[in-house]
Length: 218
Image (cartoon, rainbow, N blue to C red; front, side, top):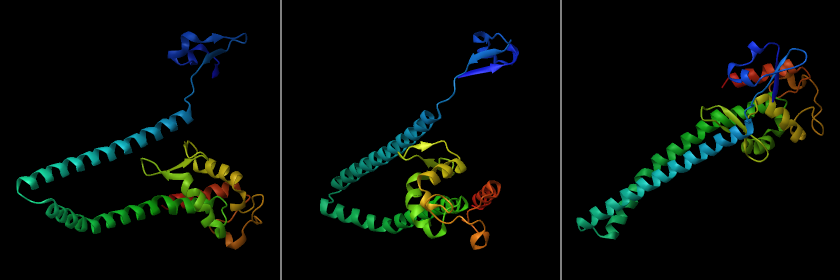
């Protein structure tokens, strides 16, 4: 992308040698602009690669442990049938712990992602009586980032570098029937229902304030 500077001294030093002076004594230089889409794709690819590598490492460790156990059992004269009983007993003992861990992870995701996305949907003009329909869509379009924040996905399921405000602006165009005041949806009467969460407003500053207040509450 071409960028113009008033003086050559204003041009970043690393690009100064390639700067070209124009007829009006300005200085123009070609600056590379990061491809945000490619960057987000690279981040998502690396995240998936890390998850796959972690799963493979755990599977390999478990397989090695099982080989050692089998070898030890044979050395001690333990039959395969007896060894299977030991495995089953250990699995039964682990199950309550694994179930509790899964429940904790699910609750954590609900608090950090699902509940926050629901609140943000309502704060951005979403209709309370259509929130479940909206969440069916938003569950596929949102996720937790590496730092625990919310990240957004496009129609193709790939991460996008949208802010919350930008995402919901686009989402409202895609799914207008889920939003009050949007084409094909609710009446959009400002202040209806006492002005609580999820009420549409024609005042963009008030809408942004609501969004920030709700997001900050989590």
